[in-house]
Length: 140
Figure 1 (tube, rainbow, N blue to C red):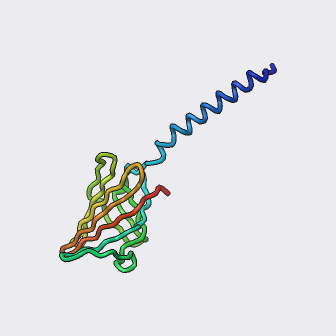
Figure 2 (cartoon, rainbow, N blue to C red):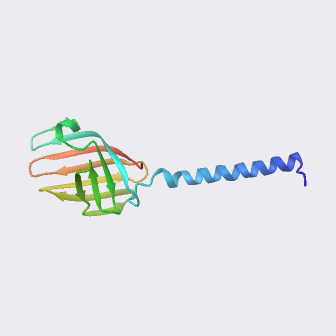
């Protein structure tokens, strides 16, 4: 059975429309996935070190902070380099943000990741200092 040109064009138009709708609908579902359901990688873009008197911008190299770290909520761990690990003590989703928290060696930390954009803010609090950390996350 031969298709007329009009019938063929109609089928191509319908197929193209369906594909466009599928692509548009799948975009938001995959654009943000920072809800903790799968591991993701974060990079530190800015860092501030504060003590009781002042805050100063620092580099990752000067503070010894890892430039990249992986957050794995299902495994309840954050890793940076093969030898650096920190257990997640709690996590929650609040108003479109994933919040993860933990602590060790006399310090507490908390990070908030925007579930849609992957933008991250974090704080590390010790007895006489605070680090304010800003960055961005991606799903590898």
